[in-house]
Length: 175
Image 1 (cartoon, rainbow, N blue to C red):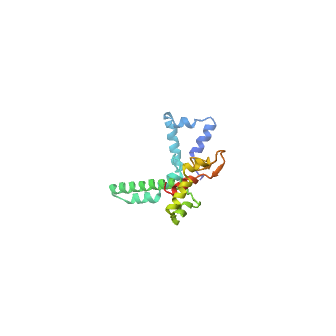
Image 2 (cartoon, one colour):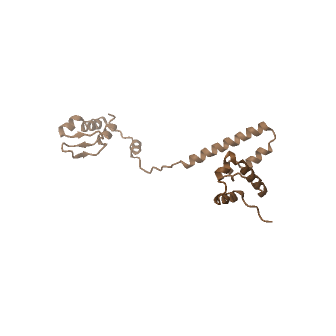
Image 3 (spheres, rainbow, N blue to C red):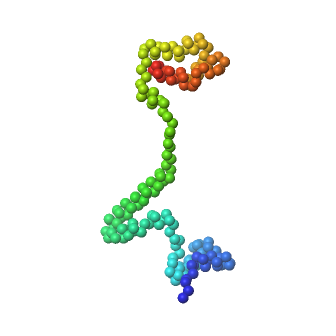
């Protein structure tokens, strides 16, 4: 005896040869075609349903279904079913989080923490000297300009001290 033919393939070939289109078969008026396909599928030992996708197979884990089928009490079966569904939901969320996780490795040295660890202790005289060096009077007498970035420039725009110079000294003297 020969092996039964897949009804889907047969109807696709018939459509190509001028038979009814797949849309005609799907329409409400195509019920007689659908019944014919159902009978043919039953004869072939299959169904009209599409095979489950990988995702659907994961959701309908046979072990989970076996567990649910073994529970006779409908209330307990419903509770266990909701727990399984909740577990699957959390598993999906975990997989989304895993896929969107970016790990950033910062290998820059932190000079600020090294200064804090040393604990710079300035004497009152040293603090006064630093404050005098970054005072507005001193900068005006030298015709220097302090930029918002803490950089110091002369009247020609030439850099005297790099960016952050005045800001760092202000932090050191707690100004």
